[in-house]
Figure 1 (cartoon, rainbow over the protein chains, first blue to last red):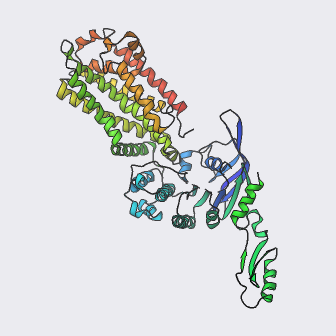
Figure 2 (cartoon, rainbow over the protein chains, first blue to last red; figure 1 turned 180 degrees about the vertical axis):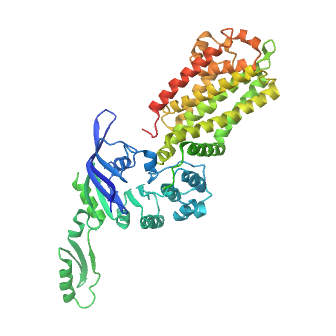
Figure 3 (spheres, rainbow over the protein chains, first blue to last red; figure 1 turned 60 degrees about the vertical axis):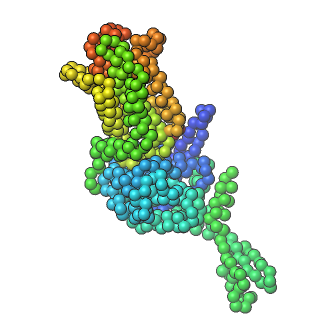
Length: 286
Length: 264
């Protein structure tokens, strides 16, 4: 499998109001394999949006090598390249006076192999709202329309910038199903998110970005050495709750099981959550 | 893979969409289409005097309002709606699609042209029906009408695109753009007879396109004898064409150089 995205030594700085140059992206390397869901995590101001917007062809980089679907967005024929890419930006409020079906039918005209409009409306679950205007959609429905617009051109690569901000938990779950179904159809997805559970539920691999550099990049299970962290074991014995940190939880449990008759009361075995690791990494960078 | 849709085809699709959106926005329909008619009715009812033998103020005013229509539907409309589209993400979303930049502007030109035809058509219809304006009687007058209209709407459109970088936000755009248009209307011989204005106002107005557009439209809709009542004692067609073309070229390069897709 080739890489959908390959980045080497990417840098970008901006001038602030006083004309002082501020480095937003300080030389990052990144590979996203074709067909995977890759999540970019990090606090506000970490350089995520700068990085994504350079990959999307919205901004020019200062230096570094870049290949997105085999081309450099800064020098390629943009319309032909954009025909293969879908972009879901952060919160939008355009097209308020057009209905869902009108705006999708219109955007379908931009692409050479657009998907069927009704099929896309069904895929994002907006069948009942197909004739509603943009201004009459709820936040979650609006975001679904954004995603529908992102996938109408049948993209090989989809960028999702904080797709579920402002969703209720149920809407997020069904949104995740939508993203998974896109992956099953072979779409590569690069997403940024604030929600760690979202990254964990969806992403094949996660990169944590902070202060313009990538602090770590791994599967959600292995991020930050999470798989090697001590495991926390809790149980109740003689009426008292005990807690033990262990490098070898299986051996510990065996000895515990041989000590206690039958079920071990209130037993839990947990590894640090992605959030614990994330906060540790973000904090460690300060 | 099938072929990518063409720039013109997408541009036409955008034009149709823009017109649909235009018709759905109550403000745009009211201000662009009905407001000029309302002004025409009010001014026509108040000022009934003749300003020269055989020429009423209403006739003078209709010519000025048709010229203003070119500025309203091109400059004013675009300088207000483009900042709004920059704010609400329309422009950024479009940039992320394969639709070429040129298609966006083709769509705008179609919108401006259609709304201009409706507004000028309505003003003409009311002018003829109520105020004794006569349609151009000779091929020469029609020719003048069309070149003033085409040059006027083109420069007005380009200048609207160029000016769209000035308003800081979509919400404030109307407050920046509308006063400019209204002041130019006062100074350029729309609401008052141009020759009755103070000289400094006349000189100031002569720097901008609207004065030349009103004069060009008067040359179409008023009797030729009225030319002697103008400041230069002539319709000055050559100078009108020259000044409008200069604005058009300057606006074109300014628009290309400064156009912004995103809020800064």
